[in-house]
Length: 535
Image: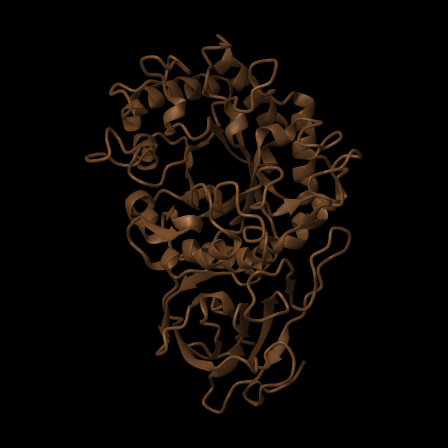
């Protein structure tokens, strides 16, 4: 394909599908406006604290270890730069005969950070906050401080920040009459989750003060809140603000806040949602555009409630931007627990690529897709899955990992405004990121067969004010345009392996006579275009 002219529709990945009509789309990029510098550590994964402990989730020995060369290779090939260690198991969910899940030992922490060094990543490390009444530890805060001191002394170079606790806004976290979890965190208005915030923050501050006595330089991120609707606003849904906003305001002048942390599963439990319904929902433009909580149809007449990005941004995260507080999504996925055949398929790749770019354009510092072993929303999984009697191994990436690599290729620089002329209104999104030297344009065609809108897009790119000397493109595809249900992916014609570097290829583009770029982006396909300014 190298050297072919796009206006001649050269054979190969960009040959328009014979079954699909083409729709004209024009992208006009205002390169004079450089809005937000995307951080180098934007791409991340989230893992349970329990994953750090040996012999968990079917793994024999350690999952995070410098000896796990498959995992290190996958991290480097995908472009993962940060992980968050926490999740429900940091605060004791997944109870064992010892009442709570094990707290990682110093040896476990050594293996984690030796892996981080080998993979070239940073770690947000969570310590426990919830002091369960069923098995109280009167020295929990002091024990946390010892862990923080150990990590700070040995592994500062690979540390992002510390977090204390997980999802404190969830109602089950709170004590109330007849339901005592941790006496220090309680609802002053029973069954009103938001009313527990004052006691939570007082408890959090107590832990932070003890940790800071041991490590005065320690920085914290948080609060790793779960609910993106209004149910846990403080002090109540009608009049309060989100815990994320309140926590950030309370710490904004303290000098110890690294960034705010939020969780976002676009829809909650999928319940009876079928594979096809899940795919249609994930690729729906409603997730990008709607400004209020919505519901999409599910099997047998049910509904799946979803929280679209504009709603979450406006109600929870835009106030942080106005305050100049960075924020990160440390748990994110299409839904909680996932739908097999959708959350682990190619539709998830198109969804994830769009999700990362949408949030980067709204000043997010990073996304950690949660990798809770071993469920359909995971990016890294063993083969076979579930693991056999020999333990987990032959780790691989699902199509979501290809989206992360595509984002890594097209996210160097500042977000720039894109005006989209789309007269036929096809389901397509586009994002621009650039510097004075390079401009990247990511185009995601989410049309697909099951919604009967499969359409190839004839895209014209007009980079206003950017004088490109050369251009090339790379394609993310499942090999069958229009079919979003496949479980395969390639990027630049290559697969992401666990034992060799990724060698995807860019293909040159030539400008038309008026200086614009023209290409066809097939249905159910994404493309990253790179325009280089030259000398």
